[in-house]
Image 1 (spheres, rainbow, N blue to C red):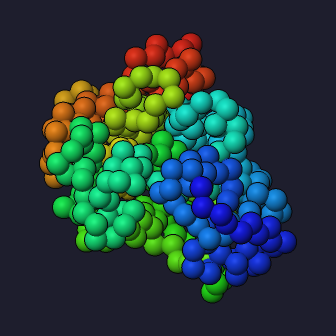
Image 2: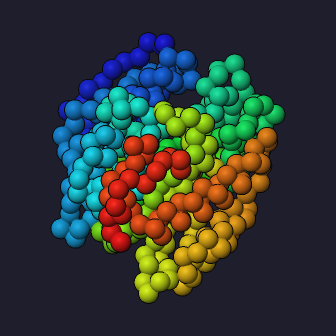
Length: 352
């Protein structure tokens, strides 16, 4: 590991000033960053430790009913917060399906949003990777790419975003609060991450020194709680990243779909909101045929980036399954294997 300077700022403003210098990374739990440093993928000159800064580790219910989650809140803390889980059950389920209990106890909300791709060629410093070294090429294009992107990819990069947490967040229209050199601003989560295009090294819209301080979920989207699910298909149910995943939330009125929110995970370099499919569902009956039509719309532009055509069909099926389970109703408590399509729904449904 490269030698680096360690900076422990006394305030958010001090942290931003220090992190604005080239070659600097923020340090929170480090569950992704330290791994990357160990293998030489990331080689910062200095780390700015934000773990101790006040006000970043709180879960707040705002006067208008919205939830504000500090960037330093631990994944496990948020997943098990009773009020939050009741309002946004599919977000809680997504958090519980990610990593091991030990990692969930350490990993932070802000860090989860910014975790890097798990593409093997990105992690291998001997491989060409435009995301790691701009202009070096993409060995994944002709390599082992069965798990790579089927939406939004380019000849420069076919990597996927690995987060579970981001998928229901983007479906529910989460807002990211960012503190930077020019003050605080809000960024919709579906605008935070960039598709690769010709510059996959530019992974987000954040500027040097920008610090994510909180995630905000509007009060209105808690109305989806009675009918919302997150499902994740993985090569092994325990401690694995998704092959594909889906978040589905419905509002049902008079036996028909009044509103819906849909997103897919592990199909692109960003969590993928399915807006056209959402529109197509409004006014329809919640049937298997309806959900299949929505899945076809959601994946209409999907195309293989290599040996991964199967991911398109898997994504269709996981979305149909998530919609069906959402229509049936949110379970009273998460399954013993959270978000697994193979888990038996536990107990009574909470809101039907």
